[in-house]
Image (cartoon, rainbow, N blue to C red; front, side):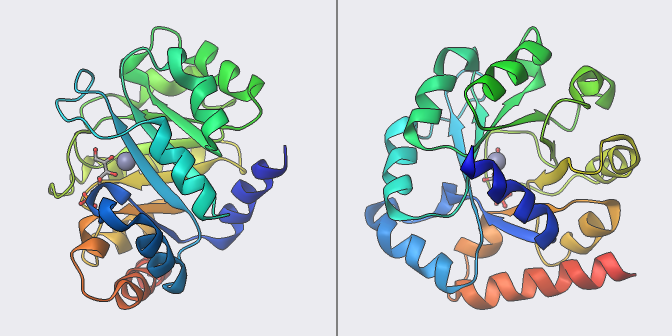
Length: 232
Ligand code: DX5
Ligand code: ZN
């Protein structure tokens, strides 16, 4: 499983900024990936939405496969879809390195995490701001990543909800030392420091990068703010 190695590399590299491609220019994905690589980005966060689990609709396997052809960077795929089990193998075939499912979208999270592992890649569990952390307790010793949503899943550009910080603080002391903690939604220069301080290793950022003229300067400022926040 060579790609799993990338994930442990990310743990060592924390804080890591993962651009959420939701707000990128899909008319020129190759250029967008180049600009992100030039900015020093180390992994990409891909938001898959089905119009059912969340009211928004984005993209599926073909875009993941297209990105796989464009870059060696780890692809962190955030599935905001009902019945994700139906599509796991297809996303792995498309080139995902890590698949994260929402606890609110599955009946048996342990089974889904096992299925993802059997497909040979990393497995994550996500929870919305209103969902108690107790719901993911059964998978905390088996998943590779916990995705703490700091906005309700569905749309970019929302305001950061501080309840995510309490969850990160709890998880930091609860999960095995190799588990990645990721935060997603409303992450910007003002909020990222608190996320780092609360224990997040991976920070997803959409509008804080794609709304900016220079991706390099946006990513650099985010990393600086995360390091400063993490140090205080
Ligand atoms: C929201 C997505 C996020 C989102 C982040 O459902 O999971 O990845 O695109 O966008 P910003 O950073 O704009 O909140
Ligand atoms: Zn996301």
